[in-house]
Length: 263
Image (cartoon, rainbow, N blue to C red; front, side, top):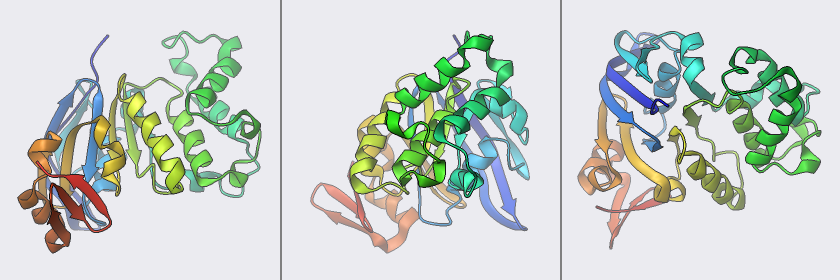
């Protein structure tokens, strides 16, 4: 089985003629969790969309599992499960249940069924397995999506992203719409997934995922640092990204309302 990998080569990305990312390069091979951190407007979501092939860069390439997926969402989608921030908006007001959302994605992904060992009769079994995997309560399986809590919605959308058993997951602020108690549970779930997959996750609360984190990409538009948490989460690099909002208190570095252990 091929080890999951992502490689960004000299990415320069512009939105409405404004350069958001410039000459960004990093790579990660193998299972693990990569946290993408930075202030609002730093280009984190843009980076994930570029890796997913949704945005074509001005310059540079994106390789996932060795395949050039630059600007090609169909090809990227063979390797990637993607949970964008706005994913839930597509189902707002629609009378779809949690089960139906995951099942509809399974039908769209019929081409992957032989690869994951799923026959026509196994679709219901797959949906049930995924909803169980993400920890959605059984009584919520057939409840309308727009009547679920923020945390339940995120679990449904994560199950949807896992339908084709992708080796790579891109999760854009998956903890944001969840209450504090639910965030810890979701962080454990994401950490568990990173044992078998390569997970890139953006977050404004890095502490919850830090025990699972293999590497950190600190990003603020045209400035970035990439490496292990001990290499990257240092006062000088954090201040280059966040400015004077970073404060050193004992062994911890505080970024606004969040904190991480200094290297």
